Amino acid sequence: MPAQKSMRLRRRRAAAPTYREEASLLAQGCSLVAGLDEVGRGPLAGPVLAGVVILPPNPEGRWVRLIRDSKQMTPAQRSYVLPYLREEALGIETGASSPQEIDELGIVGATQLAMRRALNALALLPQFLLLDAFPLPGVGIPQKPIVHGDALCLSIAAASIVAKVTRDRLMEQQDTLYPSYGFARHKGYATREHLRKLRAMGPCAIHRYSFAPVAEWGVTR
Image 1 (cartoon, rainbow, N blue to C red):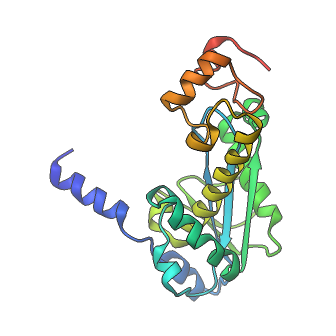
Image 2: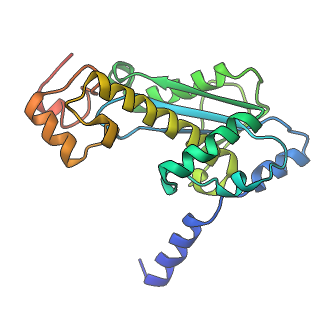
């Protein structure tokens, strides 16, 4: 990739997500627009977590300007924004699929299940869904998947924050149950530390037994 094109791509990804999609739908009469996103597809352990957020119309404030794709934010920034989201959002929920469900359904099926659980937990039924990259079948709600949606669309970015903070806290709790693996630090991702511990002790109950390298070692539940 040419250097100039690469630089433009980095700048685009680092830019603040916009309210453009939501404003367009608001102008068409949709006041309940939900952003939906997931975290935790790649780790070797722990759940996949979906977040859904219905922002208020035309949200404003410093907390809104801080919203980014959760991967572009520090833990402190995410923790700062989340209470505002919980207070200001018209709807905010999460849904999860367990490591066992990931092994049984595959990561795509388990991710879709987590998203449907998040939607079903909402008290309000969204009129429209904005999703990161892929559509969600079987929910009966008009929707638009957006490539790099968590970096470009405010509602999707907000949902990514909710999902990320919730999953990180869950993995910190799991660290107290399985303290030898370092889950509070790596959150189940395949870091050198995690792989070293996994090789030394074998998997625990929250590992994904269908994922390499766990599966490569011939381990089953």
